[in-house]
Image (cartoon, rainbow, N blue to C red; front, side, top):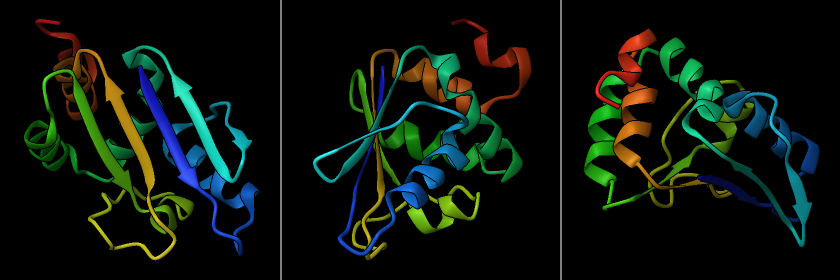
Length: 129
């Protein structure tokens, strides 16, 4: 299961933040409630949009190394820079790096399979899965 969240700032257009999320995760359903845009994805293949962006940006090796280091048992949390996402680029957000706050992503479940799926190409993503 993957949860995506972005807290809206008072000056932000909710549609632009939703567009930033969709630029990275594909045409997913997002909801806006109490100043937060969120989405919930089930299954590793629901991350195919993110996988495509990671491949296009040629950051598979970096993603594999960083996500493996950040993974804790059955959980992985990371932030995506929302300005880069709005421009269609994948950039991990480091603490305090984005004044508007990151797009927060939280994965729970078989994190190693998710990391393998996001950081490998084609059928290799499901080898030994």
